Length: 560
Image (cartoon, one colour):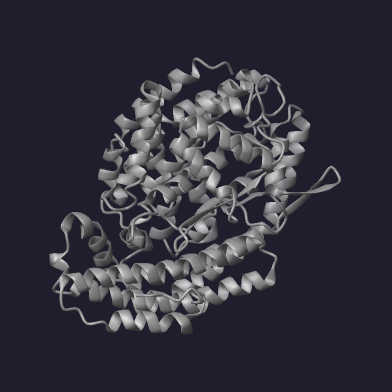
């Protein structure tokens, strides 16, 4: 199929004839079916990139009404048509008598996903998905508009994070309280958005014949290799192995700071009273130093990173009106990655940079595949690509820091692992409860959240700030826009730690394994992707314990 370069893929009237032609196309051989699959992939890639560009524009400036309307117009008028047309093509492909003649090694993963999509598709869910996306966009708009006046200057929320690293405790406390108060101003509105999302999602699950959204979404996310019960085993493993380490670190922090207990504004400050780590002065310096680090890690990865320095591939600095968080988005037709973040000159910004670059490397290494479905991977492995990069670049931290500060940065990231995995377990367990109890009240939801904090939250004293704790989950944007997308970070972190363990023994082989696995995209099942990188797909207590012991051993070699 020849697609005209002038095709406006954000306009359904222009897309519709091409989808109709593919759907009406007669199939007389396996070769016909394969050509249909590839033509559909190219057309889907154009539509996918149109949505990507609209989403990128909207998140870069949430206060721009024209951008917001353009994105919502796509979500409300084009996306539903794409879902309907896609469902028809899924059925045409899997019901074709020639589907069984397709090469198994090449197409079985693809066909398995299509069969799952066809099984779960319900036409009545299409407008509900649109409504959910619209609600999530309103959440992003509220968060993007948040700002705090502090010391006579207006700051974005990411910019306020720098004050949590200053040695002066009163400054930390007042800055934290200012941010908490600002977030609480929108508490009712955000709770209302979430209430609406729960209702929408429960209706979607019931339409598809499920008792609850959790079970529906696990099926919808193609979780062929683990079930909700396995997630609960992960929660238990984290509670058993990671929470004790986190509590130990909290007690050590309180002792080093000379305070009875760690308060929410004490978690990021340097224990020796040193100034906060500042890996770069501005985003231009961040890009330059990152480029040198990647070239030293691996020449091919360095070239890939440099390819993003042109072509509008980067929007890195924080500003008012910009959506929160960070992401990498592959523009599938041009096969060009885009990295979005809110850099404020902090160590966590450097972590975000290498994390999102890992996603971009994944996109670039798998972009050769003609099948759109294979130019990505299950999220559990996609996050291995990003989280591994945070650890593989440890030897290159001297591009940003002195030896002493580089050791601080390594310690900071490794200590954060002891809090990340409990936080992942908290968010995942929270979603399990929320969606298996869809008729709950806000008070019951808060009680669940507080109980989970007791289980996974370590030893932070929230006295006097119970309201801030009760709505702490509002900051986790995945809960709003990507339900149940979070356990993947825990599974992937265990894969990344295994990759780090490889690199400590043979860095060259580890990077080779990393690139080989990423180049497979989504063409293999999840356990096979892990194996191709030399990793074990397992997140039970024994695996978690062994990796956390390695983390503890490394922490013991780095001064606090």
